[in-house]
Image (cartoon, rainbow, N blue to C red; front, top):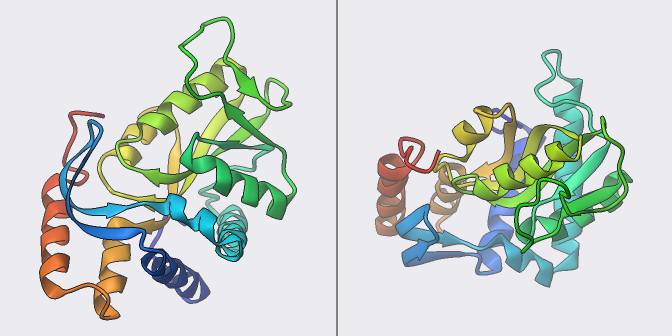
Length: 225
């Protein structure tokens, strides 16, 4: 999952890109979201997949296949896990679908709770020493993933990997690596845009503008790392 798509993996990722487009989850314009995304020419909203349960179910199958393949590799870029940890809010529906697919217990850190050194405010059943796999829909600067990982670790859980549908390539990977977490993405923003452009869904102008933004504002940005 950490490498480019090949064979069946590629077809699954391209299917995902096409479904996101059909759902209207990929838009072009001028978007500023939070601290990390400023004047982006492209906006991706993976939360729209909840409108199609069949799509959500197939996404869970694709992620399961990718996780199994990663754990079977000789260098094992993904550690075995005991629990799935959905990152509120966008990661919860994906984590729930994946939990049903892989029959693995689910937990999540309650959103909107202030930092509490004594209580991590985690919903679910777990034991200190277990390993949790973070699950989210979108990674931008990595803030939500880092915050969730910190709360899980305070509860005595190990967190070494995170899986997301889309990596916007705006610092999340490097930020997570700095705290010992590997990021695995079904799609990067570049991969998503390249497929949509090559299949005739995105105009040349929108593609060039978006790719220029990625090159200019992508992983080179470090002020939020």
